[in-house]
Image 1 (tube, rainbow, N blue to C red):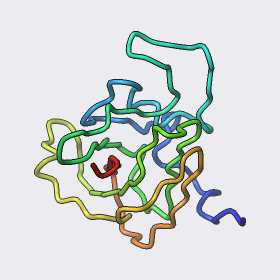
Image 2 (image 1 turned 90 degrees about the horizontal axis):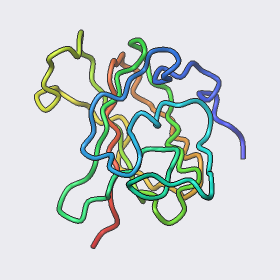
Image 3 (image 1 turned 45 degrees about the vertical axis):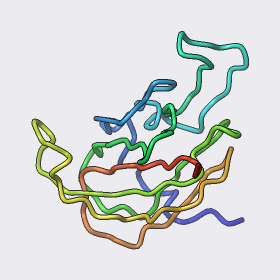
Image 4 (image 1 turned 120 degrees about the horizontal axis):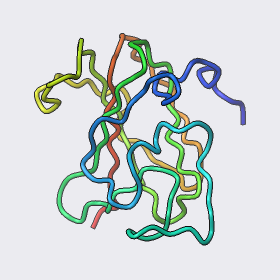
Length: 156
């Protein structure tokens, strides 16, 4: 399998460059900030927290009511999104089966109500494979400052 060209571009969401996970619907099992760490997630067999098994990724309690979980990420700098990697490394059986991404361009996130922001879907609801780098090319090349990762539970 060939690696998409966008994987060689700067990761605008990278924590080391200033990307920030601002808000999420739920991060009970594993913190939203893990989304922006460098490299692929790691697995430590005997590591636990007061909430259960430690995971190197964002893990919500997964909705069992209507709706889905989401996380808003402020990019390190505004820019064009050419592709995304929704990595489910070490999430085997507990990964969200689908995800989508919305984007917006706002001048400052200070005091902003993200429910009133005009979001644009840049990745439609897409299948996620467990334990994988789920690489998706983004065709919308407008300039954005924030992304909203939406994860969808299994249908009940």
